[in-house]
Image 1: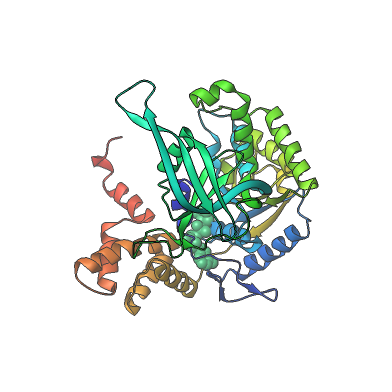
Image 2 (image 1 turned 30 degrees about the vertical axis):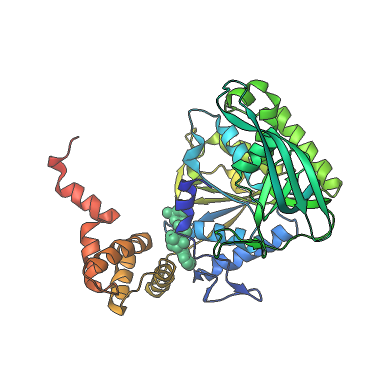
Length: 441
Ligand SMILES: Nc1ncnc2c1ncn2[C@@H]1O[C@H](COP(=O)(O)OP(=O)(O)OP(=O)(O)O)[C@@H](O)[C@H]1O
Ligand SMILES: [Mg+2]
C-alpha cells in the first residue's frame, strides 16, 4: 500500500464494519455512529452482493462533506470479509500524464479483484545440521576468495540428507544469514531459500531476534500447498513484463497493458478456478468525488460494470446539480442519467451534536488522546459550527499543546489554542476577505 493511500484510509481506521446485528443498526457499532438509514441500506447491498445480485449495478453514496460516505464504503468492504480487496480512487486521479483515463480505471478495477491461488510445490525442509563451504578464487580477481560450492546437511526428526550445492546456492544461504541450527525451506523449482527461524533447543543465545520453530518431521523432500492472494492487476503486470524481454533487462515500466495480455490473464485465471486451483475474491472499487470523471469515463464505467470480472463499484459525491464533465448538461451529482439509473443511491445526512461527540470520542480513543469533558464539548462545538473533520483534525495539535504544558489530558484551553493556530475552512475564507489587499492577485 502506498503511503498516500495509507494516510487517506488511516482516518477511517476505527471502522470495522456496518454495526448491524440481526438486520438492525446498533446506535454505535463497529466504530460507526448514527446514520442508521444509510447503514441499513448498505447492509442490504452487502446481502445483494453475497447473493450475486449486484451484476451490472453499482452503488452511489451522496451527502454533504464529512457525513461518512467514505466511512460507509470502507464498512461495506469490511462487512464482506477481512480479505476483501478495497481500492480507492479519487475522480481526479484519472487525469494523468502517463496513462489514458480508461487505463487508470481498468487498473483500479483489476486491483480490486483478488485471486486466491492454491499451489502445490516440491520443497525441501529441515534444520541445518552442517554447512561446508568450498572456497575458490574469484574468476576476475585472483586475490579474492568466493564460495564455489559446498555441502549442506539437512535433518528432520525422521530424516537426514547431505546435499551438494553450487556456489550460487551457498551465496544465497549466506545472503539470507542462514547458519547451523536454522530451519530452512528450499523451493525446488526456483532454488530460493526461506529461513523460517531457529530450531527449538539449538541455540547459544538467550534472545535470537528471530522466532524459534519446531524441527519439522517426516521426510526432507515433500510437496506442500501454498496459498497466496494476488490481484488481476498483479497478474497483468507479471505477464506483460514476461512478454517483453527488454523490460526484463531494463526494468522499463509498461505504459499500457495490452488487451491481449489481460485476456490471457483472464483465461488463465478462469482455468485455475475451473480446475479448483484458485478462487476469485471480488472486492470493492471506491471512486470518491465521482463528479470529477468525464463523459468518456462514465460510459466506460457503465460498460465495465457489466463485464464478467468486475468488482463492486461504489461511487461517492458531495455535489448537488452540476455539469457532467465534458458536456454542457447539468445533472444530479454531475452523473449521466443512464449511469444514475443503474445505481443504488444511498444518502447520508448531517450529524447531530451528540453524534459528532460520539464520533470524536471514538477517534480520540483510536489516536490514544485523552480528552477532558470540557475539551470534548469544545470540540463538538467546532464540529457543529465548522465541520466534523475540522474538529477531528484539531485533536492532535491540541494533544501536542497539552504535552508542551505537561498536562496529561487535553483540556479546553489546549483545544482553543489549536483552533486559534489552525484555521478552519470558513476561518481561512474570512481571513482572505479581510486581507484581500495584501495578497498577490
Ligand atoms: N457515522 C460515522 N461513524 C464514525 N465515524 C464517522 C462516521 N461518519 C464519518 N466518520 C468519520 O468522520 C470523518 C469524515 O467522514 P468521511 O470522510 O467518511 O466523510 P465523506 O462523506 O466521505 O466526506 P467527503 O464528501 O468530504 O468525502 C472520517 O474520519 C470518518 O471515518
Ligand atoms: Mg469521502
